[in-house]
Length: 433
Image (cartoon, rainbow, N blue to C red):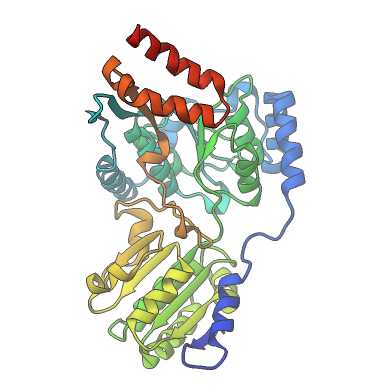
């Protein structure tokens, strides 16, 4: 059974704080192993990749077969049923249209001193996307990572997608083709992250690495950060539903289970102003768990980390939601627009009874790579901006330097940085000479 909390009851604050502090991340200490794998790839390149892929993925490769050949991708794409292809093409089109609106604009202006200032945006040169293999092989993740990179203008886009035992997911390769990926490597784990960060004889290094993965992949991304950029260190999935008694209990239950079925450490929470709704949703979750295909995963998630919280009003629900800062937030209330302004911290918000979180995972348009573990308090989901960087621009005229240069010189002197001050003074002296 999940936790049942009522904000009116004594001890609620302590119980809620314990819920926030529950550690759901991987407990296994993998950092030392990951460090050794990265060092091995840096030292031995392709040879290390081939050896590690044979050990972990039971797949024998050569430098020539690290990447899928175009003909192999052709064959795999041809295996995708037409209805699945059409669905993936619709998803790709919607994701691309949404992200094209995120492209930032360059700017230049002249300020009151006569200085020409501004900024310009440019894409990173190369990006590497990690796509999990095996049971967690999701073509939707390919689209969500690759399409924003292409919209940003990334010139070289590669994917690392392990194929344990040589088993290939044709939908992943079709998604890569639809998104404009240049090369797909059939390697995974920390060794794939190391190869993308440092390069090998066959794999050129990239500038940014994004995409989900297991504890080893997350630890590797953490270790290579600084050498390359990364998107985030994502934890287990999360969903919070706010209700007011107007929702369908079955719908809400299925929405909660849609994240619980991801991972035994995933978290699903309902906050509602209606006691009857709380009871009905909990009962519906129990019914669905009896027949859900992934009940062996969703059941422990709901039992160990799930919660049903009853509150007095929606203002209180919003306040608790902001403390949770959930990855996914559903506003299953009569008037979601009125509640939205009270929400400050959430990775993504899904408005109203007809907007299940699952629509955002696949085809809504916004990105499904979102901050977890309360990091929505200070970070955002993946976007076009993650594949771009801003370069500032400044141009002084002699008149502008004459006006603001003396202040710069004074500040340099106050910081005991003599050359800084002299570099300005030399130009001012020329103007006054």
